[in-house]
Image 1 (cartoon, rainbow, N blue to C red):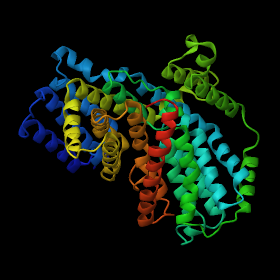
Image 2: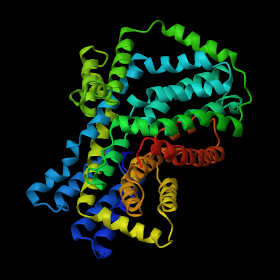
Image 3: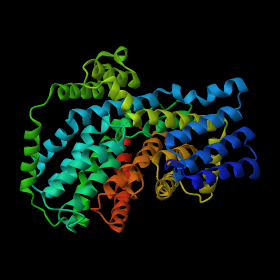
Image 4: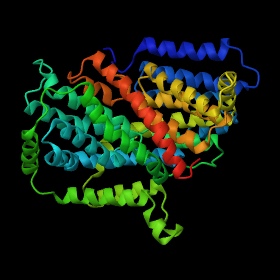
Length: 488
């Protein structure tokens, strides 16, 4: 029997990559042998993830094993295993894992669907109103759904399909352009924007926070509230323009939708009054946002400041005590435990690449090449940003992309004279916004693309258009906003 989880050719390519870098490519001047060998393991791991040689959690386990056995972290053999497992002690990794488990309550209680139908009942009399309703629903639940795939593909997409079906819009029957085509694009392009707006809106964001802290010697430690505030204005501008831009480029055939509002009201009626568990979810949601944003500390002082991960554990504890979630639910949330494993491995490898000086060396190479053009830091940053962003055409995983490129490009930008916080928030946003490009850019992509409402060519065209719009907004609106906030 063939195991479909194992792909031998990508696996062999990954092993060959490790062997070539380790044994064939000479160690560059200024780089230690340990750093170069860790790079070989790191690149091989990224190749295996991109090629899906094994599930990402399994690849992570192999990476941890390889680091422990080879001792490339420059430790004594007895300490190598501690280095290899050090990623599991990172609190940001546990923040995402616990938040994913908490987000299970949105689906289990039906609160996620209720939020979506509520907005549609208010704004669903026109097709563009439905589009904005989907976007607002995404935005509202984004802070507590670190799986952007679960949010866009598991919660919002079924609502979008139900609305399209109610208007006789079907990919199978050739009637996608009635309304489903437009709603599918809005459904998808909401996802990268909301992912960029909160640390807890997509799994790789805490990794970015860690990489920024490492690159600056912990001088820059981005908090949940700090990220949310920085992303607030550019994110809202993107959310405000995106449904309108899609409407202008690919207008739906059905523009008036008085039945959609009634459809949503009927769905809400079927759901009945909010259950006790839904009310508890709302309260936990509000508590998490209040504590993550640091509101008690603003009012009562630093004594009321709480660790972000500790707050997530508090939220989960409340859900367990009230039986909104059971321990069985926690154990069944495979994506959370999978995320903790693969994130720990990637964070560990990225951390030691930085400690061993590899990131500084590579960033200096990038910096030297761009510096040769003689541009100021502003244009140099735009070049860095564009290369980083559009390289995502070659990635099927934002995690792999961020792990491979973020730290080096951030350090290079700093060396070129870019203000640290300006560059941090710009590259952090780009790390989510780049999901817009292709039908394989992130886990949400194949779900929505697979529904068949949008042909491949139109998906890519819309992705390119929105990439330019989103980047322009984050550079100019975001840049001015961060100037007002005193970030640069």
